[in-house]
Length: 464
Image (cartoon, rainbow, N blue to C red):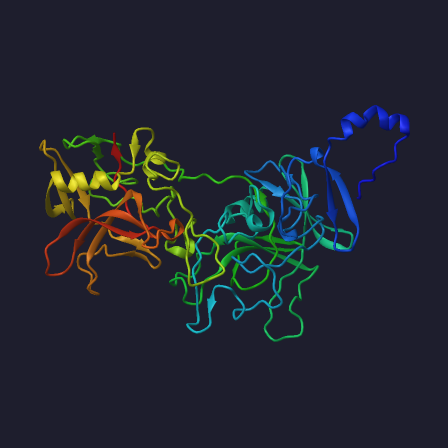
């Protein structure tokens, strides 16, 4: 509403003129020709946002007594009973048609879907995060399952919109409308379920018939809600437009499982002590867990499509990455420090260079695993197994008898990114590594190398 500047009486004006004469006034000129005036000292901050990105004022986080709080309305809705937007899985905007030809991640030429990750909550593919900001995000399959199994569901209607009143253990209630879903297959009715059934995306990719991802079974879990039927074990193809109900709650930055092995340090006679085994391993010969650079949780899939630090881009030919620094050792991005605690960290490229310069290396087997025994200047040893690494299609280069001719390889993570030739910090796609390499008929090699940050590789911590 326009602020009205009142005419003051002469006496009142004289009394406050000495105060008012120094106050600055901001004039806002609207497109319709009207103006609005505000005192500058009454304004603390001005922000600019797309209307679609502003959280509706009446969308609240409701504590149902569950592990997360649930939004009081759908993404894109201003009231609990409104249907809100319809979104394909992993997309953050609505559109006119929903089918595989319009799906953002479908390659028509190759008849295949780009894999954007097995869990997209909190990522750039999360529509709740994109539209609502803050700690809002899409619920995981487990969080939807908790809502379905731990709450009471009562079929009802609000202002002509059918749906469910959902009451949690805390006694608080939310209303979830049944908005149907959108799919355009050439028929006359793209939404035959409106006000009859509701379909809500989870953020979790389905594990269904055992076929490799991308061979016709790339589907995501969704909740299915109809009078007398409330389930969420089902899944559907990602190009369908469905509703999304957001949750509020921060996910853990690391895996909940404790380390399986002792966190022993070995003094090789160098500037740092090296761990006796990899992060996530119980013995020196085990591979342990695989991590993308800067990520402190294991992932179901790896590669740029599921890498959390890829930045949004309007140009599909240019991939940029969030800049985390020139050395992430000891930071929140250091999986060794996060998982193993104070004192432990990722080795730097200088630590790796010292290892290569001052130690001797013998290639062979340890407990049935190929790798290098590393002997320090003082005679103590550690074993670095040739583990393979995790790419888009899963574990590769881990089989010494691979019949496809792939070399036995391992990349050990360092704390340092490899600079891009352009000098652009956001184009740093690689990290420095310690690499083990053994191809058929050739001698094994261990060198300082580099690989893509979005791949899953192993981690051998060091201790100062």
